[in-house]
Amino acid sequence: MGDEIFQLKPNIYGLGIDLRALNRWWKSRSGQKDADIASRFLQVFEGHGLQSGHIPRLIPSLRYSDLASEQALLSVLTPELVDAVGRLFGVRPEWIVGIDERTYETEYCYKCPQRLFDVMATLIEPPSLPLLAISTVKFLDKNALAPQRIELLAVEKAATVGDMDVYRYRPFADGWEWTYAGCRIQLKAMVRALSRPVPLYRVTMEEMEAFYSGRIFPHSLVSRPRITDPSLEDYALSSNESHVSKESDEFPLVLQYLAGSNLTLVDKPI
Image (cartoon, rainbow, N blue to C red; front, top):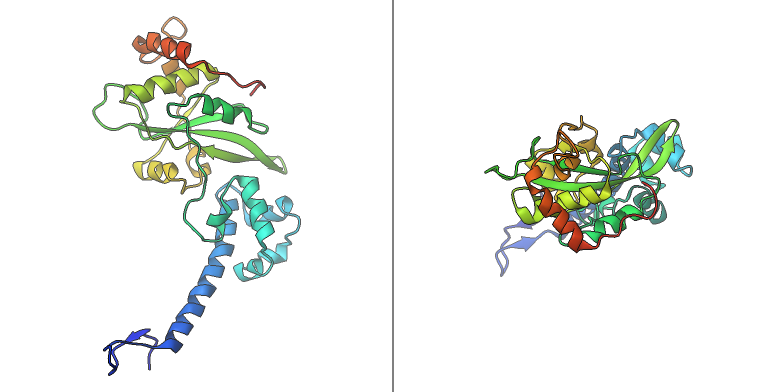
């Protein structure tokens, strides 16, 4: 007899279920699921630019021998350890243990610009560039015919390993479309109010969709060369303020939006 769970058998229903094969299948799937937990646990560190050798320095309760294999790691993993790593990197514990496929809880601020600044105010040890943007195009153009997706990403320091800073990411998922004036003017106004450079990073549409649904580690996107000409803040300046300003004809609309938004900027320097 093979391992087919559903087998044609001469019974009154015409289709029989081999319970022993079902039990073997369930055990194999359970073992695979357990292995996936260890694999995902390691992926969290890899997704933030770390190697397995860094892990015990961040998680002292783990020994190097615990990382010799996924099975060895699985034997020492606990819900408390999974939760601690989830908090450290802002990753959902449900993703680590394989309950669902959404890696991150995402933020939003479309039509609620104050939410961006509320999030920025909670950042712990933000870097010099605490807000980043990813885009499906290198040069944003309000008159373009093709879609131009863009999303924001807040960054804060999670830990230090040796002389390397490790960052935690707070992804926003607003579905911004640059060619839509409602999106574009709000983005320009928020960036102007932030008064900090906001570099752009080019991503594919597939990467953008994964980011939007909270299913990709942002480190892989913002570790690539940044676009500084233009940066997003160049679209929020007047031609009098900068000789590299972009779409400055909309500057009055940006000021008008700011006047009506009553934004409260972060209280602490970032």
